[in-house]
Image (cartoon, rainbow, N blue to C red; front, side, top):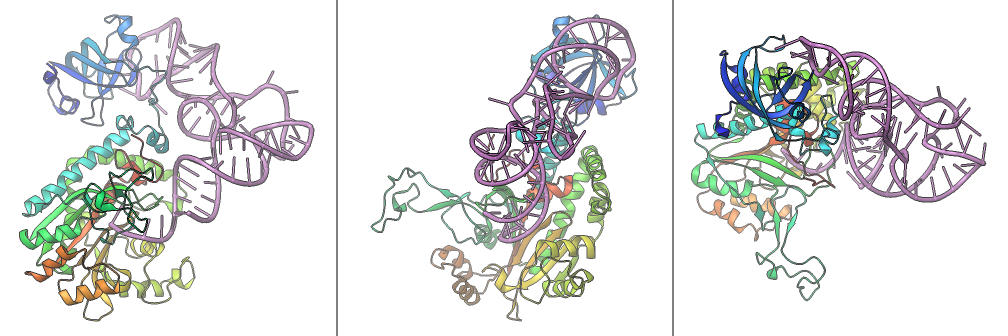
Length: 480
RNA sequence: UCCUCCUUAGCUCAGUUGGUUAGAGCAUCUGACUGUUAAUCAGAGGGUCGUUGGUUCAAGUCCAACAGGGGGAGCCA
């Protein structure tokens, strides 16, 4: 019986009228004791349910409150009012779920994102979050479609890992041992993890890359797409303790192939969303434009959201080496006038956020792929270049977001790899399985990691990463 | 973790050099109106001014600590 309903998106999209239909959804507003704006999440647009005066019991009408869930049956007719093409003239209205209007926190008015974050369980029912999470869905779907169409194998790498040598920040410990001090101890007083569930110390993964490389040494092309955890005390608009990462890993790819794939990938999924979320993106673009109006003139972005996305899809990313970037920054008026907080002195130090932003937002005004960083500031597994100073790394920097992709060609040469591990104090014995790929049929290969939420931020124009994941986890916050 | 700003009604915000009974819009409730688009009109209810301590004759207002939040930085995706 519930299957007989029509989704509001379909009801609104069809040119048909004068037919019987049942719509179900949540009341956004009830105007004039007659007009219900009903939304079921299939689209940001509401259908107008007309409850003609005098035809419904007071008792029912009183229960049609903002937030209530109702079922409305009647005839879909061309609208007599101006705001919509069709409307549903109700013959029967059933309250499926009441909503106490004195307590329901959402009102038909503008709410701050900070307030909505405190009621994350209800914020899906707003226009902004409705649009954001439909776009998020499309982007996720497009990730799978892109790789599937290219013959990549979707690999589920473990979420619990014994390795603490993945080289990407602080990890959350996973244990079933008691935390009240009664856990079994070694002679030296440290915890005896041999008694723990896995018989060893385990953590939540910070990256599926090392396992991904193992599979790429068999399937050629694989990707992962799953949750990733960092126990860093990061309090920013672009970090989460739990986030979703996409990590493709390809055999027989060098750094340039890697960058080509990353650029094609980003363009593809943005294009997919533009083709499939036009209405939601338009809404988000308008939301962003309204927000920008509040800012001082020189803080406003030159392009609107839709123009920005179109621009990214249609133009090549700028590619340059770290060394070239340093030269540009060093010669920039910005640096000469000492406007950087951290002035560019010379070669070898990592770029600060302000430098990345300058390159992307001021100098090139488009996404930038930076390659060939000094080996000292990058991970052990990155392939050493012939110059002896740099590694075949690449970062993709996006306007407004910063680093959206980090990747590299991997070091497939056993001697170079183990030497680098030694220099960087990475325990080779723990990673014997990783090193086995270099022992048995090693090949040139490359891959990258893309932060999914940062991509969703870029596409939706949302400023805070906590607003593009349903239930964000960050320091001091794991409600819902 | 560091820097900085903020915390007043359910929400968004005013609140002057410290001074009598802390305001507005929206929301809610009551009534009116009835083709409305965040409906409109009239009326009503709603506050331990984040918490604790201090200065003062007097603190929403000044000071300190703590808590929560925003923005920036670091770590990175």
